[in-house]
Structures are given as structure tokens and as C-alpha cells.
Image (tube, rainbow over all chains, first blue to last red; front, side, top):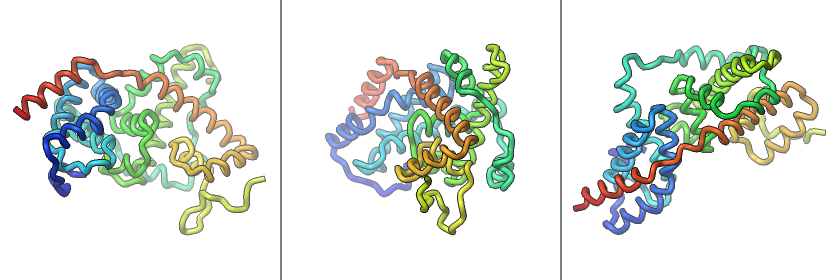
Length: 196
Length: 88
């Protein structure tokens, strides 16, 4: 899915317009939501989505008509975010993925203590709590949750979008869900659910 | 009664752990056959039943509360006008 490396298609100007309008534009709300959840800023999200769509148009001949346009666009947006936006932050967060892999692959994993959260305490969460919990995760953990839960991508698609092996997608998702539940549990406690 | 065949079994014949089965379900990656098997499995596995309900509730909450950032109308117009300029 590299833009420059993909086999080039040949489209007429009309075909380019059709692909752009019919295959790319329908994903604009998902793309904006993804951009917003990555940057946590509406103006940055707008810039990121605009850059992505202009890039997608410029490299439209790297896209094969009728294939997975949504995954292709998400990958461009993710790469633009890493190259253009993440660099702006002083010190990008780092995750020890080796540690995560070891954790996930350990036979002890089923005996690890996972956050004990109750469905009842989740029902009273009005929206800010879950959104804040998601936003508080490191961007790499946040990303897999967005791609999986909000956008419904398959492991293989996520692996391609993120340039990581499927096993890493799974371990990252597993860890992200536990971190999210830990956050939600602390919110639930502050709301008075002592046995959240 | 769970069916004899466990559709989660690894290619090398290794039996899946509860956590592995649960993750495929929660991540929405399981086949219909795996879902049916897991539903039956939960009838006899209280930890899976509890974790499944919490994880699915969190996932539903995420979908409901974190998907609503709609792209502003002016952005669509801006993109279209920039593309027109690129073609000019």
C-alpha cells in the first residue's frame, strides 16, 4: 500500500473524479473522526484530513479502483499524522512493545489481574468519561481501539494500516482494552461505585 | 453442550485459552461458527461470561460516544476547491 511503490493504474480525468467522489469522499466523516481522535484538536483534524485527501488525489493512480479505499485512506492519514504532526510534539510517547509482546505471549497471562469493572457502573457513564479515557491513552493504543471498535477493521487491515504484524495488532489491542478499563474503573470509583 | 469441534483450535492443534477466544470475539474478528461455540462456552465459564459482558459494554459505549465527530461542511468544500485548482 505504499503510495509511490504501488503498481500504477491509468485513469482518465473523469475516472479520477468518479473514484474520488464515489470511493474516497464517503469516508470523510470516519476520516475526520480518526483525525480528531489522533490530534485531539478540531483544527488539526481538519488540516490532517485535507492533507490526506489531497495526497490521495495526487497519488490516485496508486489506488486500484474497487479495492479497500477506506483502509488505503486511513493508512495515508496515519502516515501523515506520524510524519507531519507527531514530530511537532516535544517528546513522542514511547511504548515498550517488547514488554507488551512478552506479556501477551506469557502462559501466565490468564492469571494476570485484569481490571475488574462492572457493567452497572458503565451504564451511568454519560460520554465524557469514555471519551476522556480513550483520549488519555497513548496514541498507539488509542489508534488500535479506534480502528477496531469504531471503524470495524479486521486484524489484517489494521496490520496494513499501521505497518505492524498481526500479532502486534492483537497484543496492542489487548493491552489497550485493559488500560481503558483501568481508566474507566477509576472514573467509576470517583462516581461512587466502590466495587466498580 | 458444546460441539465436539472447537473452531478456535490453532493450526498446530493447540487448544486456545479463554482469553484468546474472548479476544477474537470482543475484537469482532470471530467467524459465525466461533461465535456460536463461544456462546455455549460462556454457559459453563463464569469468568468468560463476566469479561465478555464488560468488554462488550465498553465497546458499545465507545461506538456510541466516540464516533460522533462529523466533518465540518466547509472542509468538504475546501477540499473540492483545492482539487479543482490542482486540475486547472
